Amino acid sequence: MFRFLHAADLHLDSPLRGLEQKPDAPADTLRGATRRALENLVDLAIGREVDFVLIAGDVFDGDWKDYSTGLFFRGQLARLDRAGIQVHLIAGNHDAASVVTRHLQPPKNVHTHSTRKADSVELDGLPVAIHGRGFPNRAVVENLALDYPVAVPGRFNIGLLHTSLTGRSGHDNYAPCSIDDLRSRGYDYWALGHIHQPEVVGENPWIVFPGNLQGRHARETGPRGCCLVEVDDALQVGGVEWHHLDVVRWDRVEVALDGVDRDAAVDDAVAAALAAAVARADGRLLAARVVFTGATPLHGALHRRERQHWRSRCLAAAQDLGDDRVWIEKVEAATSPVHDLAELAARDPLMELVLRSLDQWRPAPATDSSDDADAGDEALPASVPHAGADVLRALPPDLQRELAADWHGERLETTINEVRAMVLDALANRQSGDAAGSEPLAADRQGGAA
Image (cartoon, rainbow, N blue to C red; front, side, top):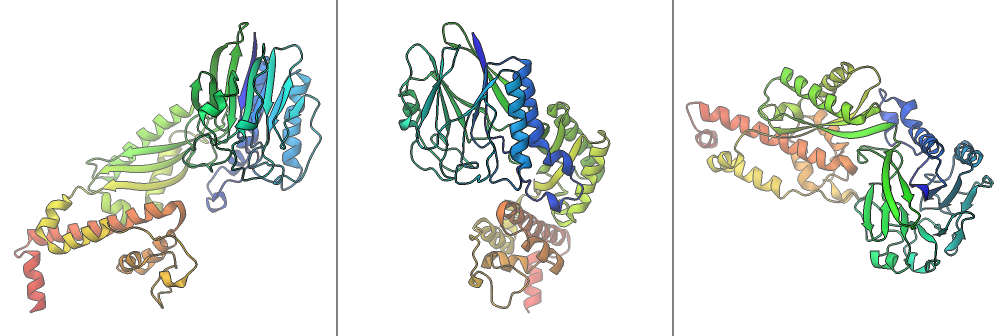
């Protein structure tokens, strides 16, 4: 029997986007998280006395700023060398031969597979054959799997490949291949990399994405780590055991506010949701994106009131959980109004028109052309489409500038929802107030026109 670790996508010293804009962020912990996760991997390999370690690409996140990144990685490989543990690795798209220009001679226990064609290594003392090929350049669009040799008879055959397989959301479609392509090689285990979400694609043969060692942003939530694989004397996989190695746990913490109409009740809901997320983080630093959800009378206030107000309330709840246990990365509102918008629209043609216009509102792709904005509209960037500019101009100038600045990238959908919420809430409150008066809204408009 033998055992090995399968890891991928270390992304050592990966830059954390937007960190410099968050002065309250635990920068040292976040910046060092990828290194600490690798140390955890090496500790696990030595502690469990594995026979070898597989790394399926993207050790680095691009070319090194200096040699410290490479030296740190080499130092961890040297720890494995002193423990008698072999390492087999391939280059992925982020550390392709054309991307990482600096080099250090690895310790003698390391085999880096060729980037020109798939090569094979039969291990001394173990009935194992490892086949692998790295990326020669960043964008490999051909099917590399068909270049791999067929299985070596009488050995446990492992394929080491960095691939998007048949495609996964959020990942470039590099080295695409099908499950049948992998099966055609006759291997017992495919150690894949590139997809950051852990996934067992199949068990006949085993086709596994271990995910990355450490989540790096709010879209990489949940546990991250590697796989410990045990193979029995019959050269059959006896088990694949997941080990969590991350030191910072990202989580999307949803706070349900259905029916909540007081700030104090918001505080209680935030405290409960954060406490549950801290428990899920299992002693790690929790990097939380707090998202308010549900139908609530506070819907309009959550969007109208300055964001710092709600962020401060979340930070206060985090303080009560203990120092250095929670970092609030961002606070978002994804609530809905308690008004019956369909009923309001039926009572008021203006509301019906606004609702129909907002439902049809779709953001235009960002462009450098100044034609995307009305001439002379200097307050709004070119990426704001005509419909968006019309709605934004109806808001106070300071709010216009704040929302327009977010009219791009991952903030776009949230910004649209914020504008929708403010417009609809204002109209609904106005209509509700008019309905409670002595004259209907339609009569008011007729009187104003007379």
